[in-house]
Length: 371
Image (tube, rainbow, N blue to C red; front, side, top):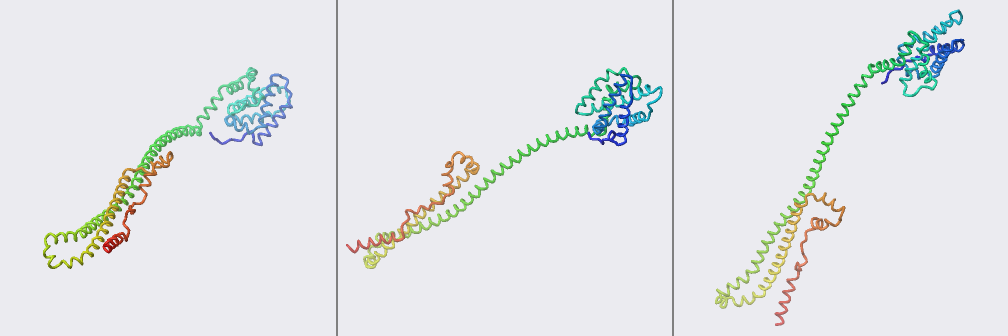
């Protein structure tokens, strides 16, 4: 609890008074042994007040406020009195006892307020005060008893009722509320964090899903293109098959139903038409073979695309799964990746060469010449 420190023992005027008092006390002859002991104790306390005034200022604020001015007045009166007269001993007895009780109160408060122990000499004074308490009477004795037993409670009561102490109590309440609020916030933040992490996981799943959806769409578009190509290849294959079969069908028809007409009018023409017809037949068969292979190739490519589309639907969490799998086995998903991300195989190894049909036609011509 912070409060403003009021200077007292460090004030120059008070220091001068205490030095004068100490000097005069040492110069005073005291015949009574008990009074001499009290004077020695007062001298010791005063000595420490002069040497460490800041310590007494910091730890004796209550008695500075309550009896500070009275203490200085007693010191002043002692300094002003003359060391002559028949009643000098009585005056010294009253003054020294009164000054001792005030100094003793400062000593008790310093011990009560300071976190550290007092100097050994000061502790000895406080410990042995009960041995000389019978020397005091009236108010002086009450002050000693008060300093020993009641004053610490009054100081504590004064501190407790200080406005700054109420702020401390209020701070404790606010601190407890802050701790509760912090605990509530921690719980709420943990819940929010869990919710955010759950949303993050969902978003990661959606992101992965959208990535595969995009890949699936690409394969689907390519598959649609290949389906059109397959339909055109099938149509072209049917046309070539029809053209290749047409000459044979015409010949069969003529032989079955127009034999007489051919013998009478077209026999010579048919003889000259045999070679061109055979040549056309071979060319049509060759192109039919090429078209058939192209049809099969497009169909194989379409099958590969359909397989990729199926795998895309199956591996929705591929990125996460691949990361976990590759930590233990780098080759675990190699086949899947090679299949998904490899090119579409056209299977061109059996595709007829461009001059394949001409080579066959040349062989037929050579056999006719040799015959």
